[in-house]
Amino acid sequence: MDILAKLDPDQLSLRDMVAKLAAERFAPHARQWDIDRTPLPHKDRKELADLGLLGITLPERFGGEGRPLIDALIVLEELAKASPIAAWPVFEANTGPARVIEQFGTEEQKQRLLPPITAGEKTLAVSISEPDAGTAATDMKTYGRVDGDVLVVNGVKRWCSGAGHSEQYLVYLRLDDALGSKAIGAVVVDGDTPGVSFGPQEQLMGFRGICSADIFFDNVRVPIENLVVPAGGFSKLFTAFSIERLGNATMSLAVGQTALDRTARYVRERAQFGRKIADFQMVQGSIADMVMQVEAARLLIYAAAAEAGRGAPSPLSASIAKCTANQMSKTVSDLAIQLHGGYGYSSEYEVERLHRDAHGWALAGGTLNIQRVRIASEYLGLRFDQRGN
Picture 1 (cartoon, rainbow, N blue to C red):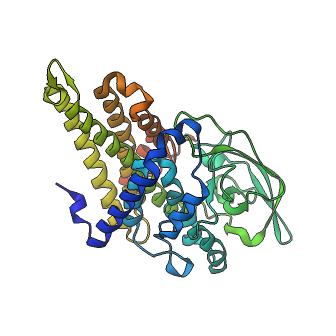
Picture 2 (picture 1 turned 90 degrees about the horizontal axis):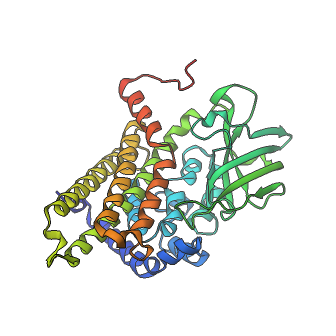
């Protein structure tokens, strides 16, 4: 079974082009970027834009290519195999907050906000979580008060990937005093707006080079025309979340496939007791488990992407793909470390980096447990209130 053989010639050509770019341009720097926690240099982001990769799913009238979601996932996987840092701008533009603008923004907002993203001039990051509102996102307290033609924003955001490096932020916030999700909307805030400040960069286990920091909003005055989602629109944002979850799942797929590829090469070369370690049955069993899990995750991701077309997959398909791929990447990268032995514990072979990043993707965009709740909810047609009241 080779699902990649079902890609059309244009998709195969795209995959080969990006794989070559990733191997030549980004892979040689991946280890050092991880060590130094280096964000992707602007010149490299601009090259991704010049190749059309930052707008591959965005409409042509905004500088994009209008391709289906699967094409963006093909690009994401090949870049992320080399380095998640290289893949990050593509993730944000094609499966992240830029898609919220494309899905729910006004025509004026799309014309103003999307072309700089596809051109590589700006990156738009998403900011949802807060110190007391992670999984329970509807507990957020960041507040936007209308004052004439501006929105005055106050609050604190946490775990914002891209914070301090991205030029713009799609900030989820409360717009009135209604309870739960009814008051929540989203507004685009420029990072250099007076009153916006950033905490120190988080020293994360993985995702090194993908900036993460607190964002502080102190009477930040944002033009009202930057309000993308008004109060009460939080529920429809699950459409955008479903797209993002397939991007997340693909980043996990890249971790798993890279761990498998590195391990397959290693067991063919490494000898113990006078034999290649690939000759030992327990090694063969582990390789087989890795192959099965990687291929299962890819099938689920591609099935959800086929369902999405140029839009979004169903929440059920997206959560199944994300949960499966996240768990796969943790398991497969752990097996890679075991099969590499002591070398797997060394940064030189980079499989320990893969394992660190695997845990990050399983936390980002909704944890494994939350995905399981979502899957059960969608499958049973029931709504489960985690507050229990």
